[in-house]
Length: 421
Image: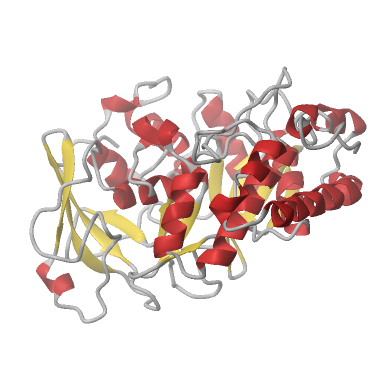
């Protein structure tokens, strides 16, 4: 298979709210260095049509350019394959050893990645016939075998190639695949040959602790295949047992930033948008603050703007469940969060600074401290139980406890000493 024959345009199909079959929404086209978008006339005539995302793609006729400083609209970029998916596609089209993602065009990535992508969009070469790509299912063991052979640069069967392509549209840099368990759709996240610590177990523990402290977090479970740990994450962008897909936009899109400008993403700016454009703004702000402090407590510093998202119903936004919470390995004590926490630019992984930013999230200092103290108590009281669920050895627990989880640095200015796990 090659990328020959792929032109400079693709048709965007979408699943409207409450509808199980996709319709053509419009067309994306490469114009110079930009990817522009046009709504189809038939879509604009639909009574139930919604904007793919406002304000960047308002529901009107004519060519729509991406926001200033961006190459394509963020809601389109949210549906494109990320680092892992691009690696799979490069391997498929260019062969083992291909490393430069710019060897393939944006349209190639959109039109060759799997169709079961996050959210409610897909990209097709035809405006008349919808043909899903990469829908091959495979047992977990075979998927893991395909990932291992892929990472080793070894060939694998066409069937496993198609199964791996199925998950190429899911974001992130780590190896993963898509699965189905009865009527539920899942993301399977695998260990990598380059892991220096038990990443999969760490993410399971953090995600379970998040649910224990009361955060709205995606359901996860951990299993093993071929002697390796695998994390299974329930997809909250699908309604179980139906063909319904739910539109999602990343915080990066909400903040009108792209990957190159992601370092400017700010929780404080996101909080302002929550106040203006989200359903239930006050409880959403409280949930956002609680996610920030939880990330600090468990050492998740990979909380960049692609790791936050919201459902889009055509009018308003609502926060999705939390996902991709994973303690990060660290050598020293000092750490920073990927997004700025306070309006003054504070981003240190310290609870004291989070408390000072509490008014940004419509919380008093006392309410903020109550949230943090509750999280500390629950993490301390459930740590052992959750580690046992993950079959985490004592040596593995020591890699996290007191380093990433309950790092002393997090408690400077808040408690005299870090609580013990």
